[in-house]
Length: 339
Image (cartoon, helix red, strand yellow):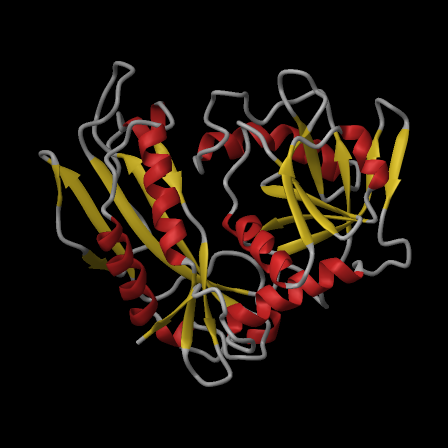
């Protein structure tokens, strides 16, 4: 392997040496298989292609200053993976098999784990889809599970940067009682029109409102939203947003820092009351929001007026990232070292 420029890695796909595969047939999961190919052979009538039976996860492996490789809350990813599988009627992967596959793929691709201090990490993508052939609309009888990895650079080149977002009422990402709470590809496909419209307007992403009333904040594109006011971390409670592991972790981190927390409905009008706002997820951890534009109401909500993330946002970010890389004590028991 040629020496990689670790400090200038993009946030994108790079071929690594190995991926892990496992197949569900005849009512049971087989053994894990190691593959060097980054292609798959899929039946033309697979339900994953026709009827959206597909779910995925995203987590990272971090190289610490001590040379140890750390995984962050992989158990929560395994639980959410099973939750998503149940949500769209796929065969549930046992947690132990999820663990075995994730740890094995990290170990086999050890040379692709970016060094400490580069700001980069090894992104891990578990994937599950219906690979059995069906022409009628029904769940498949066969499923394929894959885990691949790729080294990725920091989401923000040059440090954590505030971004601008657009409220768009012309599109919905997901409806209440629908699939919005599951990490399935259809939700991301449903967000693309709004996301591209925002990007063409010069915004980082779209802020989705609840599909039923267009009154409450739902998600920021592919991430969860949060706002800060009166020393309180406030994040939406909704039937149609993803259960973000990063958001869940930030709530606990906030409590440890003496910051109050509240998960509840967040009316659009409350955006005017926040001193800071942001989006959170695995890729960036936190994306501070500089401003939110609401063209339908002719309003602009401004944060980070000096161009820098707010103090509470940075406290939360620094503590969570410090735990992930092993620079701070893991007081929550979130880290697992890959031996």
